[in-house]
Image (tube, rainbow, N blue to C red; front, side, top):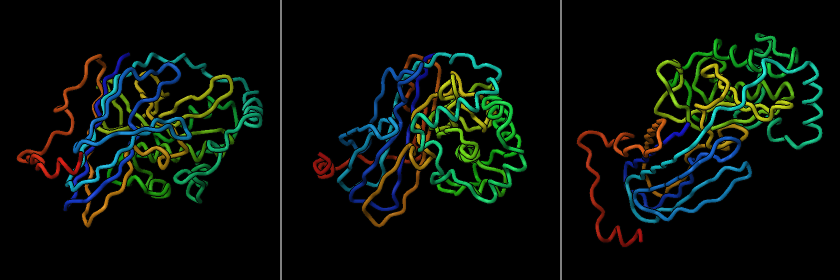
Length: 313
């Protein structure tokens, strides 16, 4: 399946800022069956964009706008091909637990096993593990399928309850949150079983017939667990899915702190607001820019003065 993706982000400032520095993780990864065939990043005001690869293999773009401005718009366009993944078995043999322990002993998976910023043990997490009777039994794949479904049933999807920097207990106490919270809870529980687990940031193509909980106009998050004989397998507890041909991977890390789509700082006495729009369609053609995050009615972006243009250059 070919997917065309348009991801737009707009930062607005209550007063002019003198400079802003931003880094973004928006380019889909090319690994496994997924291939990013094209990618384009455009900024307004225009800036020279640089890139580097972080320690998790994610491509990070960054840029500096060293001139007065009151807003920054980032438009990322990508064309991705994502074939259906190989089918999973219904279960693994009971010896898979021993095979998993041998695998983690022979290879370095410390990052995917140790507690991290947002995925760490707490008394509320321990209470949930007892409630779910979570322990090593059956085989790793069967247990994670069950956990994926149990978290879907246990938590309500509520985009108003948590923030991007909310600790895990905020979602655990109310049993509600968004894909980021579902993923952090599952990662912390799975790592407690000695199974390497990591956070995946990306996009989910929504179809009406799938009745997905997660929002259509936003990025998505799920988890990947390392299983013997299968490699990294994706689980989406927000929607009770095994990650497949609708899950487009952009970045992986220990948790959200490693892979935010945007991160930056600015100079100036101003408050900032953030708007995000995402559109994913199965097509080989680019998405019309005006279809995603249009300007509010009546808002006009003034043309830059000659002095501003000179300073940006």
